[in-house]
Every structure is written in C-alpha cells, then in structure tokens.
Length: 160
Ligand code: 291
Ligand code: CA
Ligand code: CA
Image 1 (cartoon, rainbow, N blue to C red):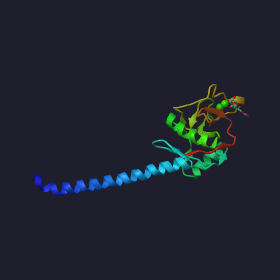
Image 2: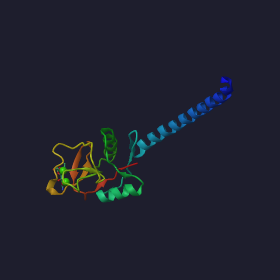
Image 3: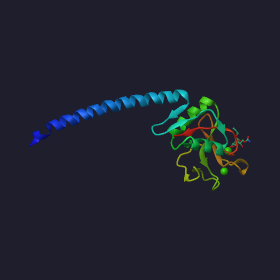
Image 4: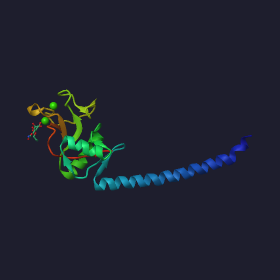
C-alpha cells in the first residue's frame, strides 16, 4: 500500500524543486529592483517602500499627491522606517511632512488624523506648538521631528 504513492511523491518533489527555482529567480528580481529603487529615488524597509520624485507641497497637497499615486504620505511607525524616510530627505536636502498631525486635539498626534502615534522622534524641545498654530509634523535632515504649521513647502515623500 505504501508503494502506491512513490510516483506521486516524486512528482511532488519535482514540483517543489521547480517552485524553489522560480522563487529564487523572483527573489533575485526583487532584490535587483530594490537596488534600482534605492539608486533612483526610493528607500525601503521590509514592508514599506518610500519614494519621492522631487516635487514639493504643503501638507494638504502632499497628502493629495501621494493618494493620487496610490499610496499615502509617509508616516514612520518604527526607527527603521524613520531612517528610510530620512535617507530620501538627505538625498534632496529638504525637510518633508509626515502624515502625522494634532489638528483634532492639541498635543495628541495621530497618524492620518486617526490613530494615536506609537513611535516618535521629536527634536529636543519639540513639539512646542509655536504661535499656537503648529499642527503638522516635518522631518529634518537629521531624522528628528518638528511640529510645524501645515502651509510650508516641503519635499513630498510617499509610502507604498
Ligand atoms: C524653531 C522652533 C520650532 C518651530 C520653528 C518655527 C519656524 O525652529 O521653535 O519648534 O516649529 O522655529 O516656528 O517658523 C518660521 N516661520 O520660521 C526653527 C528652525 C530650526
Ligand atoms: Ca499643535
Ligand atoms: Ca515646533
């Protein structure tokens, strides 16, 4: 009875070998694409790909631009994501808005106006709500955050 399946097992082993080969070539392609994206204008972590095309805008424009591109304005949830965004900011030497704001409740910063942030990288003394009108968040070239008015012109960095 045990011998009934040997052919099938061998067949399955063959299929697995084929799949392993296909998986490896897919992985090679993905790795290469990651390098190209990094080289051009992107920066990725394990899950997220961050990208800029050099255009700039205020917070509202930045959000709209990213959403039109099928993504979201960058909103780092870990230090590794923060670092990936920072690399793009350094490349353009221009600060960028994050999709984090305290528009709803002063001092309570939320992702996309919805979820209270679980990670922050504030510059010393921030957030300080200067003039009572800083409800958006920009990232400096050093990766630190500053709360800032939402109407400045900043590098647009999207996440996909
Ligand atoms: C100072 C700090 C920041 C604040 C910023 C803006 C500048 O950083 O007090 O917390 O967000 O000023 O108030 O606003 C204008 N209009 O210049 C300056 C930059 C390093
Ligand atoms: Ca504020
Ligand atoms: Ca500030």
